[in-house]
Length: 585
Ligand SMILES: [Zn+2]
Image 1: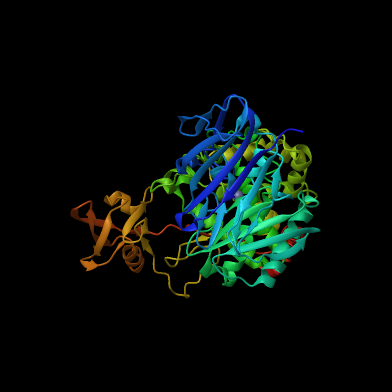
Image 2: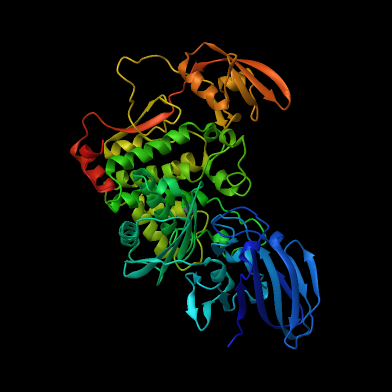
């Protein structure tokens, strides 16, 4: 039997935010130990090795083994044919789903931040033991073994985050498989959480024809701000705002987040881009398919909460409308294609700045809307005999063994299910910056309609609410406020023509004290053609910039029913959304 690599993680001084790691490696003459620079699912080089300190090594006789630091992520050991034990500390004070965090309340770690490994030993079993402080327990989706857990390979080990703390998990069953939820940072209604998550998980299992893992673990971190998740093969880590999760819309949104990460059990964890097989932990891994792995997942995260009965058909259409509205307000959709957004995620989506809305699109957002159009296009072409569900199941049967989806695999499967060549669809949707062709919504009796945003917080998705008779033309500057300063100046906007810049600190509008947020709301009270005198500090210099307001664009979008949808359209809607069209609009 091949000897396992063994890790022991302890946290005797949680206030120091230092995890202490001891790792044992089988005999070797020279052993290069490395740490990943990224963790799968989060496409940014994060240089985890920068948090490693105080590394030392000894052999099985207790003699010191020399260690040479070779580069930013590599330590070279010369144990001269003996087994070696390595000790080091890792600073962990970043509470996100893709990093690690240790304090007096809990410990959470992603293996890629903690576990030095050897490429030569990567496919061997890797074992883990955790020394938890008194009263704390460890939770992870790894297989239990004597004294800890075992993974068949390093890849499985680092795909299984670990939470350690004084937790009492919430348990439920879905698809015949036990599920656990561990919550840190606040309280949730446990019975509601279990019931709603079970319904969503069951809806997903129904789509795919059963669950691909023997157990599942949700780790939920409630925080003051931040929303996100990271998918794993039998678990997920979710982060969600504490104040929102108790509101009805927040709860619904949280379910879509959980639904999203759960859908990744199949789409990206087991069905993955061939470019990720195997993962290269040394640097960027490039694929043009992230739109499919994230966009299709984003499409289904809402749809499956809808199918589970936890979101009304009307709310489902509102959320789709909000997504169309966000895309419509992003000038970058005219600059970047979906394939390019996928390929360059490492330097664009994950490295956003003030220019991002003007130069880039999210492969989540546009990908979701392309998935919607693709689903409806397949339904239209097959007279509702087939759908995107069938494409996903075909991909699952073809590539679910982990060999990876080739770059043209998704399009080929979609054309196969549709029974005709979808290349023109994909050329426009993912390889061009042309506006999406949304006429296919007619297939389910819907069409897109647009209006102006009626208030600063108006996210679109709904019909106009303005009082009848309020026909006043609304004005805007085209800035996005970031607190007191200007965050983004949108491409082609009045603010750009006037010469306002990102980072300008707005201090007055027409001589009256007010910041960037005030500039947005005061423009809303005025009319197109009027001039606002905007006083700003640019670095240390005071400037007054006259801005001629323009008519606000109609970039709030909602899904409206056709005037008299046919029986065929009504039936198609019901088949797609799981409820009658009349109740939904
Ligand atoms: Zn995702």
